[in-house]
Image 1 (cartoon, rainbow, N blue to C red):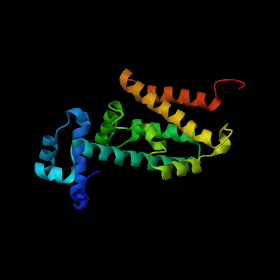
Image 2: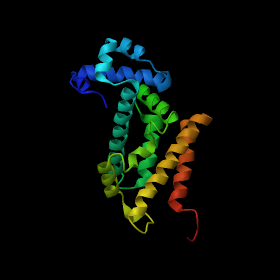
Image 3: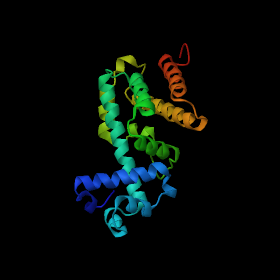
Length: 205
């Protein structure tokens, strides 16, 4: 987490530093990012940077936390809009992420974060449903899901359904990037897999 001196900055200065850092991390992965580049673009002394953050990783992880929070809030909003339909909500959110995310630097930053994910970073689409990260969001999501649409025997199965769905999202996104699929190809593949999940695999199980 940033130091209190960062939060004591005027909002405009905080946002400028965040924008500059996001630009740096959208151009290169964390391991190649530079404090020197960030402070030059931000127009601050090196000493000021370390008054705000412990190190570069501290700033990077703060940005990831902020983006994850945004994605959770977007997901909850979409889930409400689509009357608790979990498959429809995830499909629309995937479409938004690929095509409608307006800030190109933010989009690129998230792409880099997902492609360079590690156990240390601990960031992926599945963070939205990680019971260890934001339990209040998970409770709200589970409360909003229309369970009458789902073939589940008990409430505990719902969490596993969320994990399966988001794992499919993550795999599809990685496949899009590695195989350089078009947005439409990625969405078509994703829709096929979501429809398979809707129907199930076995005729009788």
